Amino acid sequence: MSIQEIMDSIKKVLEAPLFKGVFSFVGLVLTKLFGKPDTALQAFIMLLILDLITGFIKAFLSGSARSFISHEKGRKKYLGYAVVLSVCHLLDMAAVPGLRNVALFWGSATETYSILENMEEMGVPMPEFIKQQLNNTKKKYKL
Image 1 (tube, rainbow, N blue to C red):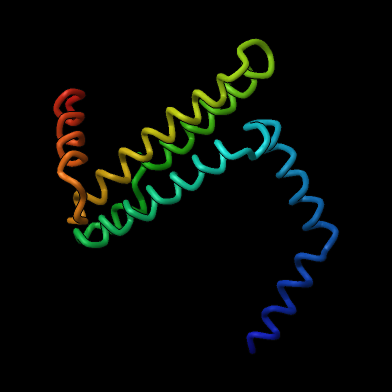
Image 2 (image 1 turned 45 degrees about the vertical axis):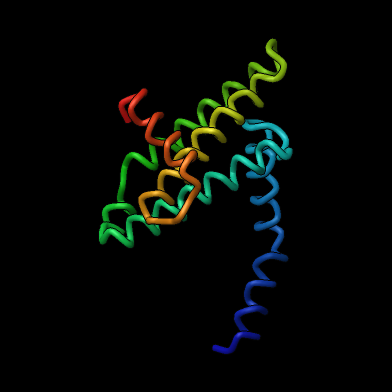
């Protein structure tokens, strides 16, 4: 099968009314659950993806990529984020304006810390003050 044949097959699927309907419905549900895809949500999703990538690279370099893929903790984290963001979005609309963004910024800070921690464990050079802050945070919160 040539690349052109694959591209033609993908184009047919994307043009199918059923696909468009399902895609639109999923988009509607996600927007109702988590709010419009504004900059804060987009940044949070990018940080989640970067954390996943750096975590996989770290696991691969340490020889534990298989355990990383089947890791229950990661799935629970994403489910937890989804529940918290959904509840915060609903409360944001009903009574507490800005709560969704607070949850997004909290999650973004958590993911940024995790990315830096992964990079440090991979041996990526970083400024000493960042290493010190990571170590201080680990000690303070017994991570």
